[in-house]
Amino acid sequence: MAGQVRVYIACSLDGFIAGPGDDLSWLPGADGQPVEAAPTAALGYEAFMNDVGALLMGRRTYDVVCGFEGAWPYGDKPVLVATHRPLSAKADTVRAVSGDITSVVAEAQDAAGPQDVYLDGGQLIRAALDAGVVDDLVVTMVPLVLGTGHPLFAGVEQRHRFEVKSHHDMVPGMVQLHLVPKR
Image (cartoon, rainbow, N blue to C red; front, side):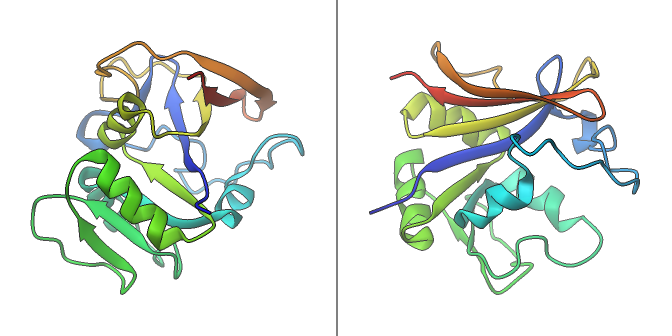
């Protein structure tokens, strides 16, 4: 039995996941300062990643992650990158996939086995929502307006309704929404 297809992402109040030029400096902790722990009821990144068996990310997201300093952030988890361009793998666990959204999600589910698939990247998330293959979203709203950048939801091809499974106030002033698409 396959796990769920899940999203875990932060966005600005105006719905951007990155600023112009893929700028992530606005994210708490991006400046090297520690971020205080989330409340016990909120879903922290480490707890989320414990349930993840594989990641499926868009090419732009992969290229941004490759620019991060330090060790490869996903350890030995399989990372599938949706792309039509040649890919230089940053780690042995990285491989390119291509095809329509349902086929690349199915490949990621095969790689994840019984665990969940972590879906990352704005275009990929929008396509997966439109295809009805996203099971769960954890969206952390950062109290900041970027004004421009790369959107999380703008550009979906249809209206999507969600059930709010939970919401939590986080520090520094963030709000985490745990959402399930209504089908």
